[in-house]
Length: 356
Ligand code: GLU
Image (cartoon, rainbow, N blue to C red; front, side, top):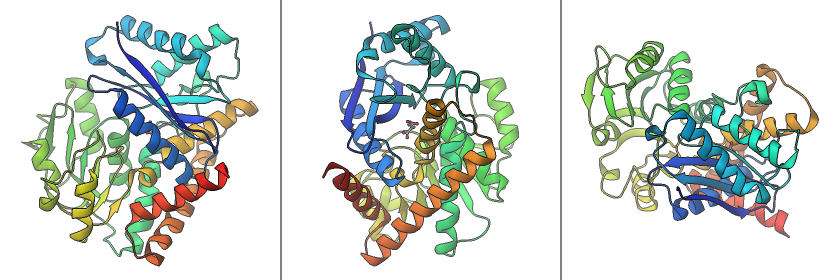
């Protein structure tokens, strides 16, 4: 028997929206905080969604595939009465995949008769998934970064350190390296590697497929997760879990910019320290909003019975990410505050207006 959750934080702007996380450390307080973040994130992206989040306290790597499927269907059996295309629309998060989403949408359809498949996003293409949803969080983060890089006069080719090699970190690494940036260090849940002259992401993907880890990648040096966060680089990209940059290690960070692709990787104390050190932090609710934005495109396509091309999806994503980045950056300059506070201000204003 496992414990599972769904938190519905705020639906002033639309149905509750947010992923479902499978992790051994997930608990109700974490899911509550993540649901709150989703409400702000959807408002920052200006998509017609509220904020929710789900989770199960489980290490999915210890389950057989059959167990994983039964657990995922079990979550839907219990949550079916409180979710729905116009009520609450879950999606993937840490350790949950398109395949898990396909079991979930199938189970929901069996229980309710719903044929739109719009209750769950992040599905495989065959069952109504959207083109471009897989890389969307990484790609959205790249659009945000690329715009800010120019505004902040950073180099065309940056040295990048990425914590995390899952859906978000892996795609970000691929996209950044294809745009001429050098990924010098990376980590997954088992260890971290450093290669000063740059990691070939395609080869690393092949290596991970074969060996189930990135440690031992030819030509790289093994380092600790703590060392990875403190490497000298242009861009530090936390793309794993929350509370990684803390009051203890923040004073030792040697990056020029922090791009938060994880949710909540920087504690509030660390955030203030980085700000006082003059290191800008691009906040999660802006930097990683690309995932939920393409999720919302998926929901819209399902409700309209449409299927958009990847070019169309990416063009719409780019427009939203650039518009909101410009707006929030200008707001931070006008108010003489950091980008996170400016993003909070914009999000809260939008939620307030919808509530009124
Ligand atoms: N789990 C992702 C996030 O934290 C995506 C949520 C979604 O697509 O609804 O933003």
